[in-house]
Amino acid sequence: MKNRKRVEYIWLDGYLPLPRIRAKTRYIDLDTNRLIPDWNFDGGSTNQGELNDSDRCLRCVRAYKDPFNEDGVLAFCEVTYHSGAAHESNTRTYLSELVSGLEESDIWVGFEQEFTFINPATEKPLGYLLQPKKQGQYYCGVGCLNQIGRYIVDEFEMRCEKAGVFLAGLNAEVMPGQWEFQTSPQGPLKSSDDLWVARYILEMVSESKPVIISYDPKPHPEFNGAGCHTNMSTTKMRDCFGMDEQEELMVHLEVDHKEHIKVCGAGIERRMTGEFETSDYKVFSCGVGDRGTSIRIPQTVAMEGAGYFEDRRPCANIDPYKVLYSLISSVKKSKLL
Image (cartoon, rainbow, N blue to C red; front, side, top):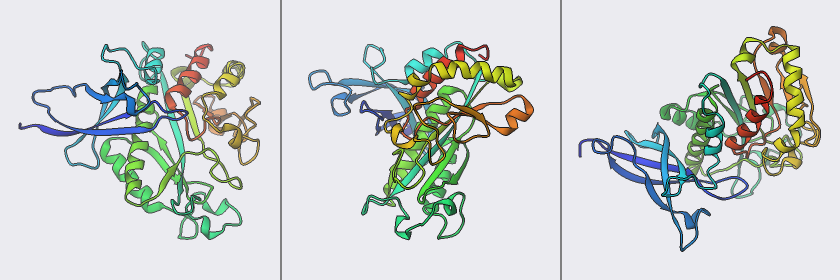
């Protein structure tokens, strides 16, 4: 077999509130199989089936280079029944149906994924033993007393680049041991897929350190929480997003606020208290350059009258497919899409 490839099938299991990433390996002759073939797995072990009905199917929806194995492939998969129907845990398929018919450029999305390194011995944030008296020194900090875990983030960044998950940026965050990476502005499905594959790469890098990757929205009560702020624009917003357009959009986002909060991550009530650079999750708010609101309009967008908005409500532990389904459904009610 001349073109024998190591293929790592990656999928999301059926656990709630946040699916866990699963993976298993298969060697495939890609000369014979021009497409990555479907593969059977035991759904009874992933909360996606029962003992007497456990066969589920992995169907590759996007392929990446495997950054851990030379010439290998990462096959990011949806979970289906063998009939071809999407499994109930497959939230990607609902987003796919919602954006069907739209061009990739009609909606651009970029995620700001925060995460926290946890010391497995103490179960506290990495760097907590420094006994920080305040958290301001860590944001974009430089030096051993001001940043924790850069060696992990550096490897993560390198592996993402090899895989073809092109990050828009990354930085140390406000809490000790907390970091953030940003996905590049892309279509909703591509940006969400990249977010999940980046999470997979981060988990793989952490295995050898060892350190726990936490997406808990409030890993320590005395410090900032962890979010996954979601930036979105449409073709019309990038052309014109002045006060009138902003006000119309905010009307629809406010009407749908309570429903949207339901998909913004378990534990949102611990993070979005109105303190620590958050708004109160029970109340919708918006503002220009205001990081204490539900929706922030960047200063540059207000000045130029065109661009995007930032949804600051989503927590670090979101399922991006659910968040975008909710957010795009609201945007579709306006004249901006």
